[in-house]
Length: 255
Ligand SMILES: [Zn+2]
Ligand SMILES: [Zn+2]
Image 1 (tube, rainbow, N blue to C red):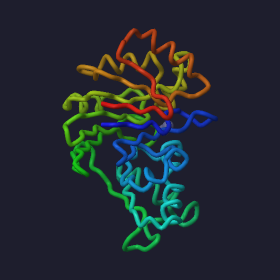
Image 2 (tube, protein in one colour):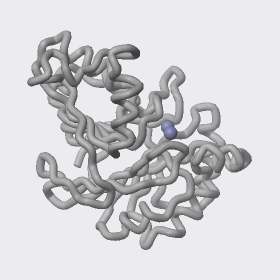
Image 3 (spheres, rainbow, N blue to C red):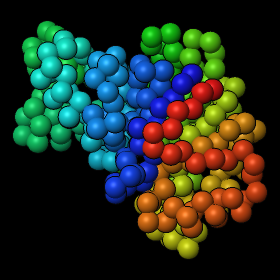
Image 4 (cartoon, rainbow, N blue to C red):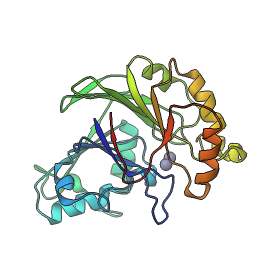
């Protein structure tokens, strides 16, 4: 599996983009940064998007991606997959012909540039040779993580945004996950805000790792608020786990 980090930050400032990870050139885990980070070929070969939740920093690349595909007349359809409630938020609040056009009818209802496909939590779904398992995490809005197994049976896990959680780690333990991508948004001194907004700090991440049986060989952290990057990174290093690293925008990861 090859993962291209289009964005790994918990907000947007110059040099730090919102979360989106291109896997094998075929699909995205979240879509906070798309059109500004993909070349035309990548844009055309992208076929599906797994969404963790409907917060703007995870979806805001989709409207411009679709606009580009239709403007270029590529004739391609992008299928956005996720929880029924997450997709409902996109339908009702973004692609509602007010905030943005309803691309499920553009260029035509028969061959649209956008399709939605709801996934049931816990029920594996086969797509393009990959097996996708979605499971609930704990965030302020409906939110789901994913376990993605490629055709060669290599598996990764992606939590999206989450505070302390249990169900997802139990689901992850059913798979031989080589790499986990999860979040740490705030430094330890902001634990109260982290818990209220259902995010993690380095200390909270340490407790979550303690729940994993066993933790994956590689853990990669995203969604750091750009203002606190150095503080969060040094607090995570202080946890003393030698399998934790930080995702950087533009990075390519081979698993
Ligand atoms: Zn969020
Ligand atoms: Zn977020």
